[in-house]
Length: 349
Image (tube, rainbow, N blue to C red):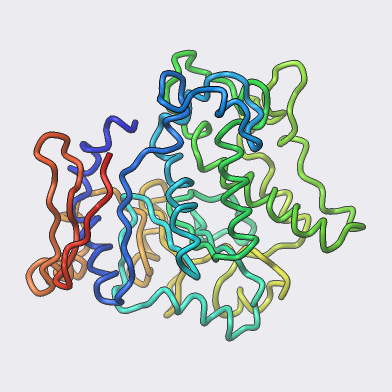
């Protein structure tokens, strides 16, 4: 997948400019990181050596071939960025801002308004209609620079390196091909549970409900996770947080009803003046009715398929704010991307 990055950029130039323009309007740093770090641990890479095998967060003795898929790089990118900011909003390449007039701080002020001061991470929800749905596509995540946020990334990375002697899940293709359950999305689900468990066991050691599901333990026979079955790659995350009476919501009535000590917020986007981190238009077509009032969209279609208002705003970004990018003619990777305040150099490998 990583070798296809240039091709992915071909289809996402306007997505990138959309985000750069949003950052320009609000004077945010917009980091477009193209470097590979975790993928270098794959066998044959320059860092596949004894140092890798002695990594304290890594239990897998075999070649972690799944790390060659670019989705895992977001973990390293977030670890590099988070120490420099109070909060970091990550978005996939096909994550686009729908409401340019809304600052990221509005999410944080909503938490402050409702006295939810222990929230350290905000994640999206896919369907936005089922109050009990806590599994989600990891197209976006807002993380606080805090001990919880830092450990979340560490646990996410540990999952990527492999929790068990043979990794996490079987390679059902037997060809070392990409599959969503081998990528970082399930790793974030694990990291949310593990980090929550770490902190709450320290705070409430006698709470019998704070038990990680059996699915995140290693099977001594297979050397893989107990969850390694044909239909259970979900790691029972929703069950874990429901047992703790966690509720979704990041504004209004939904936010008011969650426990003040809840450390993770699942955002919701409905037809309200507020919204969540984003509406998933890629895999959940029934969410189209929420798109008009959404803060952002998970939408991989090119800009000619965006709604008229977004197309007009994109043209304003290019014409009025001089948002543009420059690519390497050979590799296709981005060399510079920015708006009128001066182009920022994009990191390339």
